[in-house]
Image 1 (cartoon, rainbow, N blue to C red):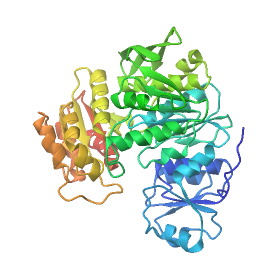
Image 2: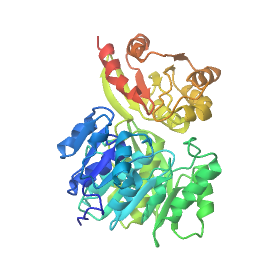
Image 3: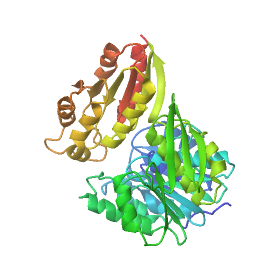
Image 4: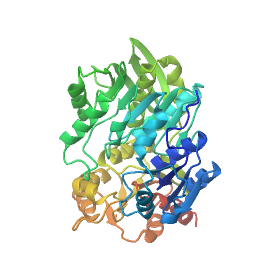
Length: 463
């Protein structure tokens, strides 16, 4: 199957084209034959990958970057109204399309699987993309991170399945109409857009209501928020399939056995036991794999074929990604930025590390998240042997008076953690080198530019 281009998207211009979500849509449009252009704040490997597909990428934002023949301008919720390219589009009457509307248009005519939840979306979407590709089903996919294999965050395949990460942060997942939807968990996050957990539930109910007639909601039977959502959507339309370790799960996890940096998982599905390998460490990743298995089965793919194919998934960049080894220590990158994610990744590392020490370089992400969850972030760091805490990465937000990374530091110390605040990132490689011993695991953790420190730490350790 080779869907055509969505209406008015034959010459799109992307503002912020280097972002994970935006670049994926741009890649798929380019692969479908669109003349794609866009701009981003800085040069990056993503910009280079887009240019290799024939995409025009401008560095910096300027009104003149918007071509005269642009058919539309694609934006995300992070783009401010005073962006000069957006202002030029308004002057010239060029249609403005939100990223989620563009992605929804790309799914039209295919069989979509949309993966939602507060945590684990990228991993679960990636597991599906890799395993379906392994089975020769040639899916299209759009993911919020780069795969280790096949090496991209997006692809236009000629099969009839489209796997997409569904972002709840700005309610953009309300635009999709999936045949199968996964909800991994439901927690309060994205405090700038949701005032309460009740608003989060309402948003996820709206998402579930978008599932096509005869479609399926695959949802965790273990997580409290997911169970509450299951109660709220009961009888509203979609078939509900629960998964997890809970005794009442439809797809029940019987065991997760760690095997170094892998796990052996046994599930009970349709009355039959099925054992398969998950090639990344941690119970939470094993449960993500079970969600992927249940979703594929709901779409009609035999579980006995899909389960072994899931083993082909070897990770996503920034999700416990090994960056290298020096002086007998391993440096690993973690995208975890919510306390639940931090706890899960640190527990996974603890299970895999044995007696090794775990050292963390943590960068809180967003002032609003730190204001609401700084205490819990600090408590999560108590799972490490020692931590350095950087200043807050602001991303799209302006500072909030009185909200600093000291909230995390104070909470970590109150929880008994060995934690040191660091206000100059340039000092981190030397500080880590002074702390590290052979056998240690060093985690750079957070959703901001803390990831850039991994190579610098390795370089310093090697000297």
